[in-house]
Length: 246
Ligand code: ARG
Image (cartoon, rainbow, N blue to C red; front, side, top):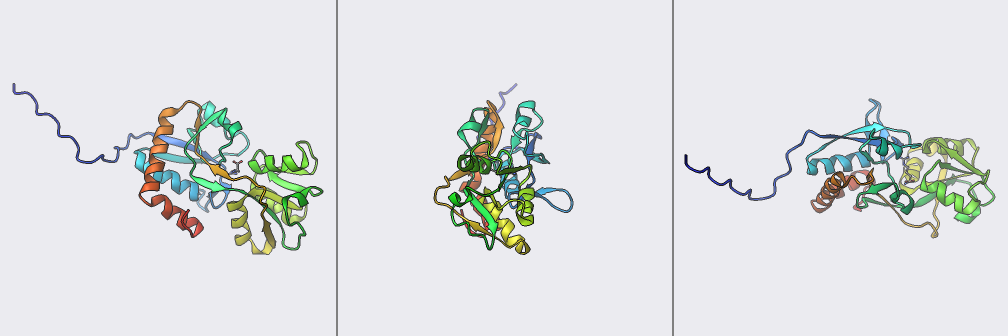
């Protein structure tokens, strides 16, 4: 029989065919505009759209599962989640126990106070009761000012609970990521909050976390992220949620 003709090389790299693999993404969906639950119970937000766009480029699928922040990173080791995408700041400490994608968002801490508060800088929080979401970078920053074991740090399992407590007067300030504080102030005018920034807050970057050593998935994520940054789809999502290009 005649030898089979050599297969023609593809003209351009096609998008990889979907492998049918569905990666489970853990997210604490009480963190608008990054992740929240809509009336139908679906998880939506900036993070969701970024990851879906990445998955589209990488030829894989993702399924978001609302997961409490407390213990969220352990779900990578147990295999309950393949990724954690939850406005997670890349820190040296976290890098010891999980791997991160390239950064996909720049953030910083912001102080939320009542509109009539005299707080003008981070140092002014020293004598005050301050609310944070337990185990976040906001928690770490406030620990540095007030001391790790200070009774004035009030830790909440979610950011909305901390902000509710500020509204009720149980704490006098909340320290949390800028995007979330700004979003809350804009969408809850009756709370009468304002935000206070401080030049001493260090820049933070969000990354997608995977189980330590999962190089295969990390490469797919980083490839997809580079592709959506290159073709403008990342910018379009940023524009949709924040009204600006990154
Ligand atoms: N960026 C902060 C951190 O990584 C807060 C993230 C909280 N995310 C959430 N979905 N509650 O510690």
